[in-house]
Length: 333
Image (cartoon, rainbow, N blue to C red):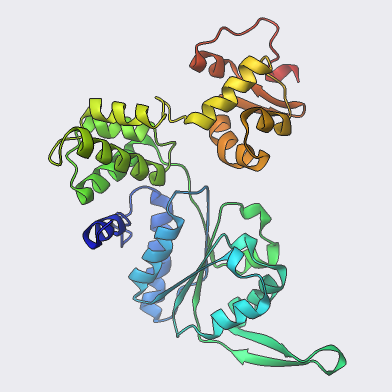
């Protein structure tokens, strides 16, 4: 990929709240928070962005830094496994800098406890030495704004969650907002795409802008190969491209359908345990639970019960399979 293409890919991320599509409540709340900080000439309060992957948490962190006129430092929870890692990161921040920590719930416990004091009083205590001779040395920090992102806010300890001045909960996008995301990205990528084709991509994007942009790039590739560099991405091209990549009419991919197929055909609709289901499709249990099941549950194709996973009537209808009369229902469990 050349520099021009890299620049276009980077431009898909909006730089301001005005360009950011969707999440109107969160945008309004962030605008008020940042504008108040600007008027008072102080760093904005610490911000926690919570929600499923792909909804724009990293993009919003970049927007916070851009609209505040502050530099941005990027890190992640898994990269901070010792208190010393966090101390080195915090001590290098410049006044007013925005620190973004992705997957903040995955930080080491010792680093979390150090972060409490840093967020509240802008200082950390460094322990020097060991045993009875250990000494605590206070280190003052430059005022900063922490933007934390998490896909599992329930794993955050209460003392850490309470130190964020504002918590934003991002929701899945509706098809109309996703169409606007696709339209904006298509313009950035130089793709001529009619409304019907935009709507089809939005419908198959699982309510997630990241997936919408990914599918749009696959459609662009298909058009470049089969339609020439100036070819338009019409509805037929979108359908052909997404069929090639095993994305069906409601956004299910190969693994999603494999889970449903196993549940319906091998286990008579369930109930079946997670570990058994994951072995049947050849995937790790964590992948099935965290990647596949949330969407299937959200659209009503799969139900979690105390006895295991079951396929709903909608799953049978989607697969075009008649439902057995003795199949268990959720109310039976």
